[in-house]
Amino acid sequence: MRIRYAISTMVFWGHEHPLSFEQECQFLKSLGFGIELWPNINSQSDCRYERRNWPRLAAVTKDMLVSMRSRDDHPTLKQWSEQVECAKLLNANIVTDLQSLGITDGKEHGPSLTRQRQEFVAEVVKLTEQNNVKVCIENGHLQAIKQVGKKFDSVWYCLDTGSANLDGKHSFKQYVDELAPRVAHLHLTDNYGQTDDHGPPGLPGGISRENWDYLLNALSKYDNDVVGSFEMCPSMPTVMVRQASEFLFDVLKWPNQPQKQADADLTYSPI
Image (cartoon, rainbow, N blue to C red; front, side, top):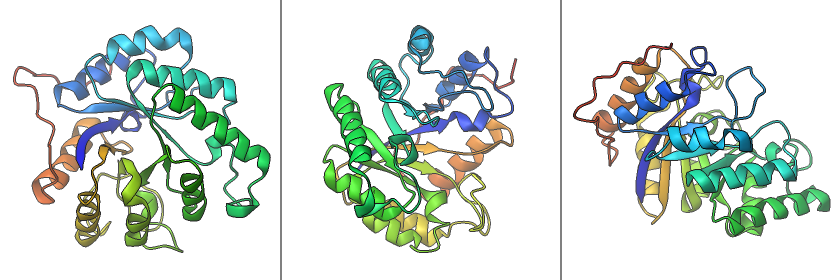
């Protein structure tokens, strides 16, 4: 396994606004992290991946590791094409869920998926293959994810540690065992097993050290390029990045810790 790290823009929710993107990227870059983009600023509808925004995205994220959270507004095939082209421009993975692929998270999982929905997924996968963009499906309904992966060899998985800690039907270790061979993306987050709190990894009473170690050991068995994205809701970004980093790298001893730039003296303070 080769792993690099990013911070989801979720960490800036409540602080970000249309003019803050440059500062957010500079802050994360100064700490040695890449960025996982959400398609829009929290509570706003304007999509970052629309073509008119590409020059700004490319300029601000230059020399950064970038991944993209898919549009979650039931994107059409035309909108999928646009965000795939954006991902190609930024050299980014796309992380998606079943709903953004047109698959309802309910009774229509598995063999009951309609032919129309399968054809839509096939068109999305074709777009990603043509543009050499890696698409990663985030864990939700485990068997439905596995079915999509079985049908499409180029599809990868995103293992969300918070969601894996909440599933009443499958254990955390079952998620790891099922998905690890094709994991290319991680959402590194923590909770107390009740709701998806999106806390920083290492919450006292959260995901056990045993499970964190099990995850790293399982991933290390495979020769995958992995993006580990810290997906955390605010408190302040500086606090969350520090707490998550201390737990993952100082306590758990995960490899390839991002290095703070030697000449960086930047504090994130929203404009």
